[in-house]
Length: 159
Ligand code: FES
Ligand code: FES
Image (cartoon, rainbow, N blue to C red):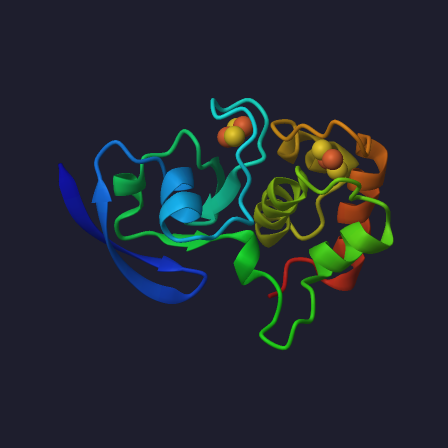
């Protein structure tokens, strides 16, 4: 069965016919071509697919597309400015060694953004908790935590 849903995607109004069994991850990547959001495990364990729905970081592989009707979604594609200037979190991950292969990075950054939007002064423990569902197999977590802390100093909660 197909349902028409409407939502905001990175500030743009979207209307889309979605199959009831589609996940949000499928909608974003396979239907809309937004491949910045990654599929790792596909079952809620790695965090690579993290996007923000109504200010909350969610695993889009576990979220049904029809559930985003009426919501506001943010993905990694919406973070940089239209002139290409990176969001402070993106720039900070680059500057502080928070990225190696980059596969986990969109999810790490979206989880971090949800945290700093809610709590701009998050401390190390709060950053750890916010990223507890995001797995990185190559960078190690200390450079990632430092990247979030440095972004905080740059005003990481701002668009
Ligand atoms: S792909 Fe969604 S949590 Fe791993
Ligand atoms: S940078 Fe490679 S998985 Fe995190």
